[in-house]
Image (cartoon, rainbow over all chains, first blue to last red; front, top):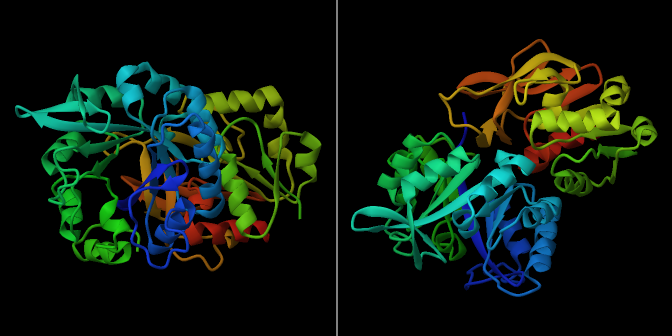
Length: 251
Length: 192
């Protein structure tokens, strides 16, 4: 039986992890490779690296990081943040990334999804969608949820699937940072209307939230950052609790 | 020991190379026929779409070479699928090493299958000291159970997670991405 996945997300700037990360046993708290190895040993199923740097050297710095992660880590990882061309993706995959995630560039140029799928296959193309509710309707947003678009979440998600994406990473901007739980109603609707895996993101605050998003939200995977970085939730203990609740996980 | 990863333009080859390095071996990438033939172990990777990957094999002449290899050969993911008779993906013929036709998952399950599933019913020295445990997969097409099945997974139906015929092995999963379990399987192959 396919297990539900737990995915820590690391924000990267200029090749270093951002935000305070509360790992006392880290030699270098800013080294994404070391953190990735620790998460992998603790039982993370996958890792996501989200690059938020905006320098001219960005592309090379990120490719170097991907290479160093692939060298050390024996679980799959996804790289996202500012990826906007077939060439960008080619470089990252060649350096050892398993998947890439695209977000704004897909909204601006949906054909990019088709082009990437044709060249690299569905299995490595994740489309990230940030959305929040405006007057009761889920609206797709860009720039980390700051800029609303014309697109509605469920229509856009369906289009993303039809264009061949292998997976959707859905972040609810209404839930992100609240620690009140994932947007399970919207997630369940995505999971029911689409036939590709859905990764839940935004709102994780405690272990019960993960159980809820797998059961009520019908999510295939759950992504979180701060609860893992600040050791509020250990991955191993989380997985044991999920297992106790009858959710298939890799322990 | 000379390990060659066949480089025909398909797939995430870097990860396999790194996994082999973590086990203390070195692998070289090559599409040179005599170098492949002289290797002690051959790894046949593949990620992407079956019919276009098969075209790359045909163009390079490797489609004729791979089935005649005598040393242990390990096909991974699409590599394994291309070693079968045919694939529904792009309706392509395969190398015909494994006597089974690759088909698509039906819509009763989410496609692609992405993530960790359990390998069961393990039947080869490839799995020496390997428990029935989780391995990492990402695929939309699969080889049904057949006489060459040496491990199975369940996703809607039971299907082949690994195949073996003579010196040829194939895994639908990615041993290079399957944590310690995957590394043990890769090590077993390299020690054959």
